[in-house]
Length: 238
Image (cartoon, rainbow, N blue to C red; front, top):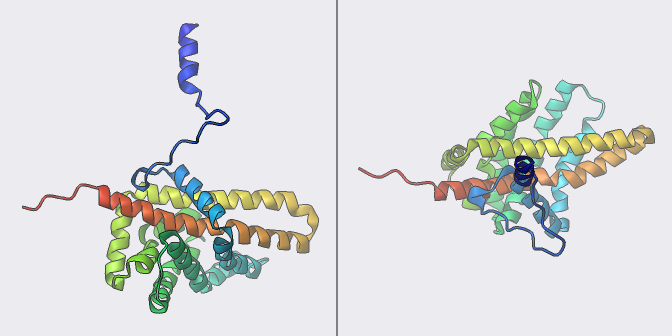
């Protein structure tokens, strides 16, 4: 009986009592996937009207691809790469709280569009290869937006950030995509009796409201990975 009570005390999670302060979030270099998602939601709530327009690219894509074959959906998604890259640049600027020149923004959008191009076609195989690709090189967009190096140096920096903790990068992006997909699917099941037009409008609004989390999460992932690089021990010079 004593052993069972002890096991129950260890296995059962503790939740803050009413009135108790919530535990402080971990610093970026040790932030978990769940905390990155939670921080994305918190940031969204604190800057709702500034963040909401980030959902327009996904709204446009979803409305254009309704009823299309999968291959055509991939083509439309690839063609909308500049819109997706622009939203990611804007999310990076919001999270980094920095100004960006028009030239730097256009360069980040152009490079981001090229990086985005393979992702829609990788989804034809499975979603995970596309997420793995973006986890490896996708951080080039916030690097260009916030650090503004040359394009070649930006790709080296993006890969350095990915390698700092690739499991965290991959898990974070995969979780963000999974959360978005599951909530969207729930809305499909709830709204399927509204008819085609009503369901389309409702899902468009859902895409507008939910998809900014994808871009915010990617920008916060840059913060996490940059902190991990800074905190990692440097090799000693010989």
